[in-house]
Image (cartoon, rainbow, N blue to C red; front, side, top):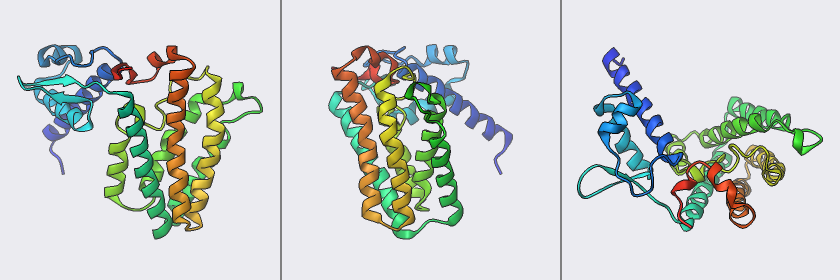
Length: 247
C-alpha cells in the first residue's frame, strides 16, 4: 500500500498536470514560450517537485518540448499534425475494436457498453436543437474509454489513451463548447449510428468490420475540423488546444 506521503505527492503531481495542461490548451501560454517553473508553481499553488513531474509527463504527451537551455517550451502544431493525430486515434481505436471482436468480450463489459449506447440514444430529441448536447459529450467520452478496454489488453488501453491525449485527437475535441453549432449536432446523428454498428460488429465477432467502422468514426473529427477551417474559423478559439495550431 502507498504511504500517505506518496499519495500526497501523486495528488500534487496530478493537480500540477491538470493545471499546466489547462493553461497550455487554453492559450494562456503561447507556442514556443518557455515555461517558468517559479511562476507556474506560484500560480498553481504547488511545489516544484510535483510540477517538474507534471512537465515531464506533458512532454511525453507531446504538448511540451525540452529546450537546449533547460526546461520546457510549449509546442506548436501544423494542420498536418492535427490530421495525423486524428488518423492515429482511428488506427488505435480500430485495432482495439478488431481485437475485441476477434477475442470476444465478457458479457458484463458488452452489456455495459450497449447500455452506454442506449443512454446516448436518449440524448436525441425530435429536433436537433433540443438534444441533450452536454450529456451526449459526456457519454461519448465514456463510450470511447469503454471501447478501449473491450479487448482485455492493458497495453491496447494505454496506447489508445496515448493517441487521444492531444486535444484535437480527443473524441470530444470538436464538440466541447459547440452546443449552438448545428453542423456539429448533425454530425452526431451519424456518430451515434456508428457507435451502434461498432458494438454490433464486436458482438457478432466481425473484426474487420469493427475496425473499419471505428476508423471511419474517428474521421468525423477531421470532417468537423474541416468545417471549422472552411466555414467558420471563429469557432477555432472554442476548440481546446487549437490555439497551438499554426495556419
